Image 1 (tube, rainbow, N blue to C red):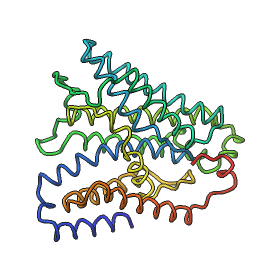
Image 2 (cartoon, one colour; image 1 turned 90 degrees about the vertical axis):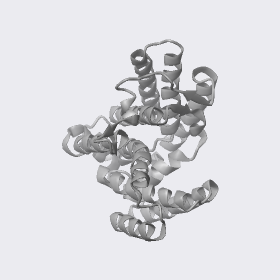
Image 3 (cartoon, helix red, strand yellow; image 1 turned 120 degrees about the vertical axis):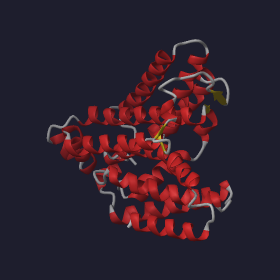
Image 4 (cartoon, one colour; image 1 turned 30 degrees about the horizontal axis):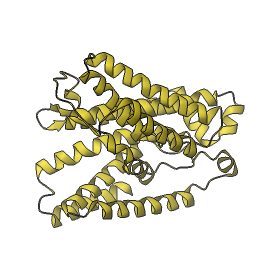
Amino acid sequence: MVLIISAALFVIFSITLDSFLQVSNLVSLLQNVSILGILAIGMAVVIIGRGIDLTMVAVMVFTVGWSFSLHLDGMSIGIALALGFALALLIGTVNGFLIAYVEIPAIFATLAMATVIAGLGRFALVESDTIFITSDLGLIGQLGSGRIGSVIPMPVVIFLLLAFVVYLALRYTRYGAFIYAIGDNYLAARNNGIATRPMTILAYAVSAAIAFFAGLIMATTVSTVNARLANSTLVYDIILVVVIGGIGLSGGKGSIRNVLSGTLLIGLLLNGMTIMNISYSVQNIIKALILLAAIILDSLLNPRDEQTSQQGDI
């Protein structure tokens, strides 16, 4: 259904919008939506395991921003990125610990952590709203600005490769099977000997790691890190991609293929609204209504059971 809607939108925009079919616009669409898709992959892993991660954008902005701040202060880019990645993993681990061991509902734990990260990030990690990346980063810079065959942007290639790797991990490894089992029935998974708490921590660590790499790709694409992005509605766009793609918020359902279809649909919609010069505020209203409709539909198709309500993960 999502692919059919995407195809219909593509045809409609091709007919009604003069600049939509231009190669430059289609390439820009793919490049812009690839970052959203990468973040949605991390969110999908968490949601399949019956959780949610509202810290992804804050992690992306401030861990990568801190890395480049350290680099601009004279630290080698390798060490700076390693420290930023370690910080992202630490945040993901703390998220998982709060949810798995302290048993704070995921939506509240990650919402609070996002606020903490944003506050500490501006206080101790990133001094300005915008960090300009002016030095030559070599191969690292190619992550965002490189192209395959001078046409396909490197972020698109990375998005598809990551989607393939995570798809294989979820479908064909025992760890992926554990994530699905935890999302489908947390108590049954624990009673069957699955280490549910460590697996929860692992899921949030993976989400944070993916957020860091998404931020690195974004930074090397536009040559800046914008700290104000942490206060944007991007996290809701990520959730919108996952939900509208067909991954149930009740957990245990869905696949990375749903992320691909959801990313395509939202990418087309955002690109079309931008070409039509629809204001940012109106776009947010439209996206919010679509997200609300998708959540209502998801609640009807995948009703929350008593266990999920008691756990309060979403």
